[in-house]
Amino acid sequence: MIKVTKLNGKTFRINPLLIETVESFPDTTIMLTNGRKYVVKESESQVSTLIKEFFQIVGLLGRRTLEEHEDEE
Image 1 (cartoon, one colour):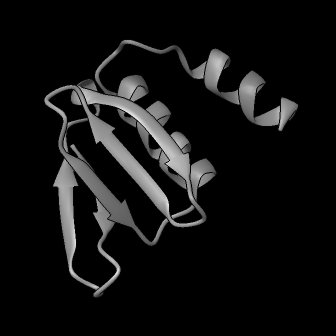
Image 2: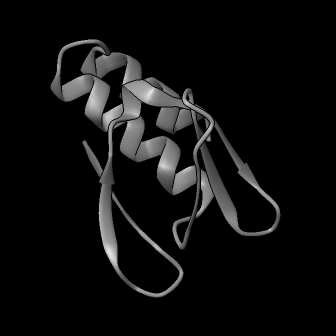
């Protein structure tokens, strides 16, 4: 699970395996595979980093791959 913040300041956790899209409108909106949408304070790139870190922790993304991707940004 990744921890994100609603616009009202309350934090909550989302299962990154259910995330379909992350977009900025300009607020960051996370759309889940079940159609639910969440608007969060974190930027699109911050959410992307949280997702990558989660996949790394559960063993779906190697550390080297994450570091190489961060170097590209």
